[in-house]
Image (cartoon, rainbow, N blue to C red; front, side):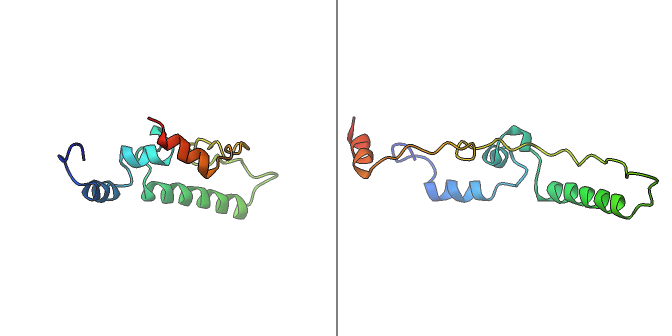
Amino acid sequence: MIAGRGPSPALVLLLVQRLPDTSLTVALASGGRQHMGWGQDRHLAADLYDAINANTRATGQWKGKPPAIPPFPRPEAKPKKAQAGQRPARVSVADLYQHFQRR
């Protein structure tokens, strides 16, 4: 809400929470544009595809080694900085207070 105009923050939060899981907003929150269109149904279909291929490899009567069946292509998640082994800098409460008091 800017200068008392516009929708309330509670309404905006409610509308964002009700977005479909295939929307661009949810995709950007999940890791990027490559997640666009990847809802629960698409993830389940990809998992089902991989499970059927694993079952085919396990139960097939192959002469020699079973064939390599590539997994269903999925969007790659970008690694977070915390996962890359970098620890966030330690900040004290006094440092935070000083940061927010500056103008």
